[in-house]
Length: 116
Image (tube, rainbow, N blue to C red; front, side, top):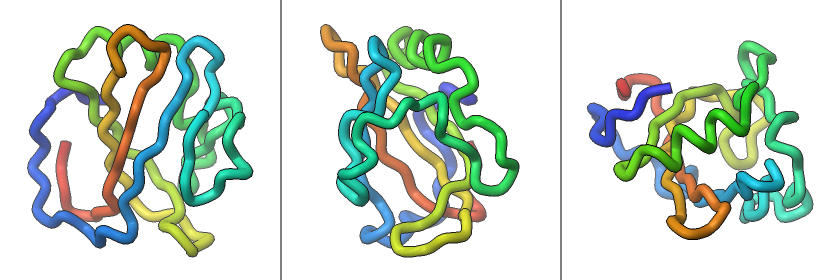
């Protein structure tokens, strides 16, 4: 996990592949996910990297604390299926705490060349 707020993004990706998602850090749940609303309420401990099979957030409490401490947000990379696909692609997501709430708001891009 990196906290650099300005990664070297060489391409913006396809806008159709970018969406916002939200976690409730008190409950450790996904509370907004527009592509699959039926997954709202998913325990973020269950979210796995599509390539490695490991947990994306093995310590959700620690991850949430890190995001909340970084006023400029946190970047994280992992493998996740693009909308409409089953296979994982490299995704880089930016997480920002919604101050005064338990929420972390995030968005990401799919990019094989960007660095964080």
